[in-house]
Image (cartoon, rainbow, N blue to C red; front, side):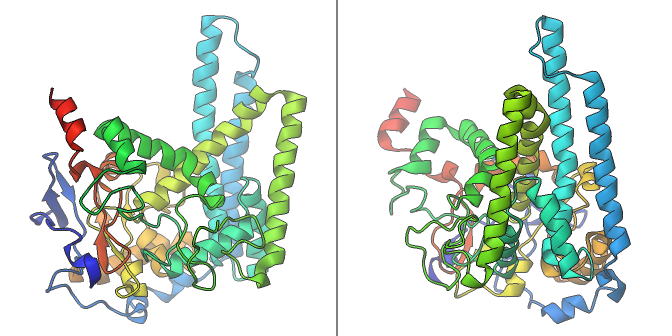
Length: 436
């Protein structure tokens, strides 16, 4: 089992409240924990994928051109309406009075947040296309997905390839993709908890709260472009299963170690379109002004990116969710290490991608409009076995808690649980400085 056996020395006292497993954290409040602990000697036997699928009504997997396109039209109409109203109410001219400044700031902030929120719906629909869940025709799926994603500067085919690996290797510490946990060594922690460099040193210098805020900001606003560039959150192996050893696995080069040669043309097409889109935005800034393009496009773009990173971060991360090394990982273990959460009104805008994520990771071919029914079915099957993860914690609170408690794993082997830099002792000099 490697170093994973002691990955979480204190799992906390479990207590069931309204069917939800809870434990008491050091902060004093009771928080959700996953009911499944593979380190527990009494952990239930995991069902096979076929056994789980048998619990889901067959019609949940039926895909419809009309239903899927209806949601594309719905989201597009909402975006067009918001653009129309905003164009009537606001201007991108530099404000000259305090009142105009207030209207400018609050008006464009409102537009940016809600347009980015609506466009995340388009992002999710393109994501469905990438999985083949949008319609029975993969050609049609790729046509729609390419348009929707490239409009958001997403290299559709490159992301389609890497995201498929994310599903094939969910919560695999070595061969996973997207939000792959870093180790204590990656974070700059020494063998005896010496804070040598990087996050370990940054955390000590910044303090608990400021570092958590930095984690949220860096995830939501830097995470997506850094991931596409191969600079953060990627796996540790190339497409052949060989260690990257410092090579950058980006989403833009056909020669990237992420991709086999057979997809080179598709990668080139996606990257070319992304460059052309950026070129048009530069032209628009020249023609209409930098402020206009920032207000109309870049601010919603940043919000859209923040949403998609938030989902992938929160749906797979919690101090009680295991991550697995090569010797312990199985596909079912990885897929069941996914969490469903309630996002309130945003479930409508984002087609319930966060509240049906367990179903999605088990069976990504199920179209989103049937995923809720599928979720009810697998919950009925998995929950009595202690294998279904649903965290009722409001997502902003869960985000803050994860930013404070999920920083690294001990090692890439065995069964690992995320640990917090808050639990690592400060260096002697810093401790004296804090207490003096």
